[in-house]
Amino acid sequence: MPIPNSTFTEILSTTLNKYQRSFTDNVTNRNALLDRIRKNGNMRVVNDGGATIQRQLSYAENSTFQYYSGYETLNVSPSDTLTSANYEWKQAAVNITISGREKAVNGGASKMIDLVTARTKTAIATMANNISVGLYSDGTGSGGKQIGGLQLIVADDPTSGTVGGIDASTQTWWRNVVYSAATDGGTAATSANIISYMNATYDSVYLNGDAPDLIIADSNYFGLYRNALQNIQRITTAGVGTSGFRALEFMGDIPVVLDNNVPSNHMYFLNTKDLYFDMMAGRDFAVGEMKESVNQDAFVMPILFMGNLTCANRRNQALLKA
Image (cartoon, rainbow, N blue to C red):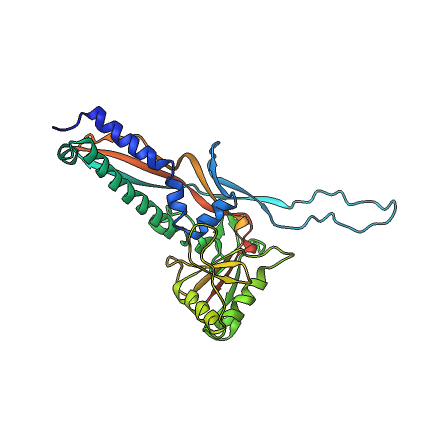
């Protein structure tokens, strides 16, 4: 005998709400970048909305600094050192659907819980995988509706394009650093030269102790670095923090992580204190209301996301590429 609609709704809601409490963890634990952003306290849920995600920037020194003597007049002219970048809200959804037939044949409560649990786990994995892909995108996927990832923020060509509403072709301070193995290094990356290329990339963004704290690479560059370390018998670390990501080490304590979503022959040197993952309250991988289809024999429960990856200082981010 099919379970009553009230019991079905309760089972669906209870099961999903149990997973909702850990949904963000399930997404971030699958991605080293999101994991580091969260640990930095830069994964934020915005409660007051706004047409865009506004990120305050520091892009210039204060021009009033001076050495002075005695009663010399001090420079108190306004110094415009702050502006803001404005990032678009990007939306995504994954739906858990159960047909009327499935509801009928899974009439027992335990069978229905098993069905909903399996569908929920699939939905979580689907959302996590697609967000992870988006984190390395340029934001043009799905007709421009995809989140703007590292190919946008840490671009292959930082001298052009608009990021956060700021045109990098005219605002030179709003450019990430790029080190090209072929152009700057003189030859393609190999296990023999990858460390020297990584040193040069790291040095290009190191300033007064402010330096990259996470390196993410594709399988090729990760493999070259791993081979280079094995040649000199360097050891690896068991993971990044306690999240279990397998990682190598650079400069003694900077994790070098493999992510197969990274574009081929790319290695990102990230200063993650300037990277944020902002989400709208109520759409932070949140479970929406269950709906019964008006033209199908089916029930739908959406899981909703609204947010984006944002950056406060592109100049602190670097890319090593072919």
